[in-house]
Amino acid sequence: MLKFPIYLDNHATTPMDPRVLEAMMPYFLDSFGNAASRNHSFGWVAEEAVEKARKQLADVIGANSKEIVFTSGATESNNLAIKGVAEMYAQKGNHIITAATEHKAVLDTCKRLEKHGARVTYLPVQTNGLIDLDQLREAITDKTILVSIMYGNNEIGTIQDIPAIGKICKEKGILLHTDATQAVGKVPVNVISDNIDLLSFTAHKMYGPKGVGALYVRRKSPRVQLTAQMDGGGHERGMRSGTLNVPGIVGFGAAAALCQKEMAEESARHAFLRDKLKDKLMAELDETYINGTMEHRLPHNLNISFAYVEGESLLMGINDIAVSSGSACTSATLEPSYVLKALGAGDDLAHSSIRFGIGRFTTEEEVDYTAAKVIDVVRKLRELSPLYDMVKEGIDLSKVEWSAH
Amino acid sequence: MAYSDKVLDHYNNPRNVGNLDKKDPNVGTGLVGAPECGDVMKLQIKVNPETGVIEDAKFKTFGCGSAIASSSLATEMLKGKTVDEALQIKNTLIVNELSLPPVKIHCSVLAEDAIKAAITDYKAKSATPATAQTA
Image (cartoon, rainbow over all chains, first blue to last red; front, side, top):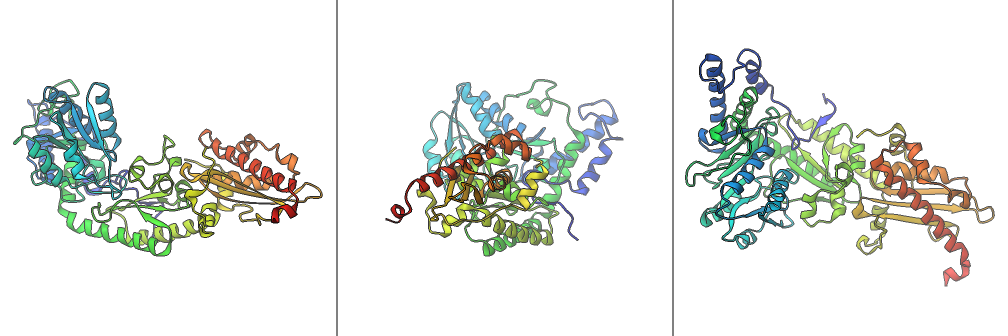
């Protein structure tokens, strides 16, 4: 039995796994202690739970427990990593390299640093969504202190070649930060083999609770230092003050352990459902384009543009399915997705894009229903579309003089 | 985002979708907007040359639900009006009728532009003798 609405927006957030909630429950009422209380059992119980979670998180990325710093989420982790490095290594240099398709938590952090005298290079991406490694090498100067490139993209699912990027950074003695929010728990991530120095991730993208994240900070070869961005009691080895969110952290740890245990099976299932959705849509609808490479892609991500159909009107027609669009009309800024624009596909394809995110609780029946519904609504909207008519008449839309408004 | 019932009604049951023969001297065609802006409206009117009354109107729209609803409503408003009356249709009328929120006002502006463009096209055609057009 299908239950509506169907949730296919798992890049925005994931539902909690009931097993995660179960793990968290005792830490709301009975075991409510402050993990920093050293003199009584309430504190010890909380601390023990936090340390167990720290180990679970370290394990999922191949790190050591002592390298995990708890935060409020990936946005804070990104801020702490980039601002913390910029401040700590200011003597060494002021140049940061990132990419055009990064999350705003990275881009806007870099923009703020630019106002304070940092120099930032925003690498373009190729049409497949990947950065060009030669361009990265060329962008490095003797003032470069940090490269920040995301692991898996939140819109188009593109997985950057982090091991190769890490190798380049290591050779040059530059730190590598990666925003791995969408990747951890979904694809194998290993801070040792990938040569990662700092890594941001969060619980609510991996079936854990909202409001808790972590930053991996490498302790050995090299030992990475950060200037704290929040002053207070000196928690988390002085890098992030603030009383720990014990239930959240317990949930984060449980969520990570489940992801790690089930990753191989789960990612295969996600890829199967994703590919089924893609194949059905591509077989039934012409003028349909996949945004970003299929080759290096998160297994649960699909981002498709249905040409000559505007994204918000498509969302309106499939209102029993929760997805996102890169259309301007669906964004707060009324600008189409900057990630899709960075692929060079043109604004019109960004306006026509839909992001589907498969999740742990997505069923094959839901995918079949979604494919049929999208096909039906796209056909209906193309009946309404003057552009689709014009193209069928053989008119080249790029040659038409439009009255831009 | 919540849509008004009227927007939903026009989106689900768009009125007067289709094309009129743009070569017909009594048909005026307006094409406004741009694909990279996310909305394009094509609005056509068929005018009775004797009475100046708009006898038929058709639209096709690429755009959000509010843009579709605005153009659908515009075709309903046009039918039965004279060309001069049609020129008086203001976007605010569409805003009120559809209860459009502020971020969607540009959809109604585009619909007004489409009406004006269709009428301008019709007038340009009817000012030219039909024989001259075929030349």
